[in-house]
Length: 112
Image 1 (tube, rainbow, N blue to C red):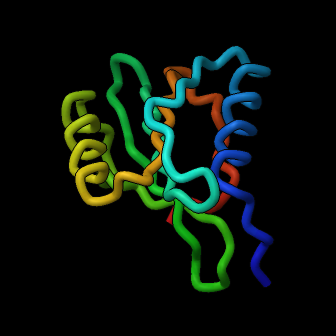
Image 2 (cartoon, rainbow, N blue to C red):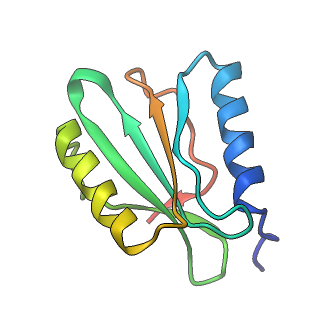
């Protein structure tokens, strides 16, 4: 059974607050549609590189994450280029950048 869906702005605000509690810098880079905008996370791992995760739903309708940049970390310019392409298709997209070189941020769904 799927979990009820939060409005996009509520979820984004909750993630920024969670990061603040852990002293992890998080910035809303692009505000999307308040009610139902899709969400991208740019996890900046510092010198190791970046990954971009797309919020999706699994077969059961539960929140999950898809690694849009593939299995390996990429340079920041590649992550930004991917985000730019996604924004050209979906102007209602939310983008959050989390600077987390220590890997402290925990996803709230499975990585698929």
